[in-house]
Structure formats: structure tokens, C-alpha cells
Amino acid sequence: MTEQNFSSMRAAMVDSQLRTSDVDDQRVIAVMAKVPREDFVPADRRAMTYVDRPIPLDAGRALNPPLVTGRLLKAAQIVAGDKVLLIGAATGYAAALLAELGAQVTAVEEEGGADIAVPGVTVVRGALAAGASAGAPYDVLFIDGAVEEVPAALVQQLGQDARVVTGVVDRSVTRLCSGRVVDGVLGLSSLIDMEMVVLPGFGAPKAFVF
Image (cartoon, one colour):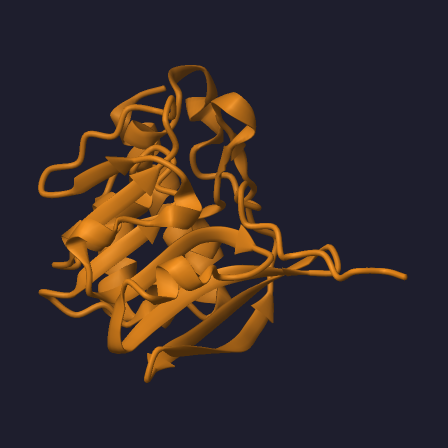
């Protein structure tokens, strides 16, 4: 598939997936029209690059659909200079977009995941739920997938009034949520139900049953 094909598919993705689904932040539109998503997709799956569904990766992981990424970026309200803690970096696509928006990105991905080579992005390998405390405090927590709950360990790495965007798993339904941290407490609001990748290692504690 030629570069021209990918460029045309990227433009179609912006027009048919993003603009028609409430991704109306022009800065987000611009970076998603610019950054070549195909560079972050395994070679044998590049034909799926701009399809609006998850792209399977190795070790049971997957890359979120473009619309999910766009909605998360819009909700995050990134401004240049923001320190962003990205959880679930996968292949580095979201990290590249955040960096293009001017953020200082610390991207966390599990050991053994795909290689991530994005200029200006600090990659930390380890448990996703542990975050990267060495770089704290962060202005934004960007969880690129759905979790049953946001661990206290991640909230503790955020500064006052930090923004949080994430997916939340609620009785098998995934929904996009955003919120802020005030006095160390995270408040989240649901934005929209969306199909998105569920990240491993974020199970909520099970209630005791008599």
C-alpha cells in the first residue's frame, strides 16, 4: 500500500470518523491528520490502520480505534507544556499525538510490549497500574483504554486540578469518562459509551459475598 493510499485513508478517517462524531477540537483534528498512524501498526496489519475498530497487537493487547483516541484527546484539553502520564502506550500512537500537541509525555507500557520510539517521549516499562512516580506530579492522566477503576497509585501521582481521561468498564459496557483531581480526590463524569480496548491489571476489588 502506497504512502498516497495512507494519506487518503487518513484524510477519510478525519472526515468520516472524527468530524462526524463530535471530535471538533481543531488542534486534535490537525495532529490526527498529520501523524501517520500506519507507522504505529504492525506491518502485517497495516491495511487495518484507519478502520474504526481495535487493531490486535501481540500478547493479547490491541490498539484503540481512531475515534476513541480522538475523543480522549479532545476531553484531555492538552495545552503546550502539560506533563502527561500516558498509561497503556501500546505502540506509541497516542504518545506521538500528545507530543505533537506540545505535551511532555511519560508513556507507561508493560515489559515485552511493542518498541516505542517517539522523539521527546519518555518510555517507562512496568505494571500499567503503577504509573511512573519518578516524573510526578503530572498535569494530565491519559489512560488509553478502559479500566474497572483508576488506582489510587495513579491519582497520587497527579497535581492539584489535574485532568483525567480514561475509559471505564461498567458491567461489561465501556464508556469514556473525564474528570479532575481536587485535594487528592478524583471525580469522574461519564461522557459517552464507546467500544474501546480494555487494559489488563486494573480489576476492581471484589466485594465479599456471605
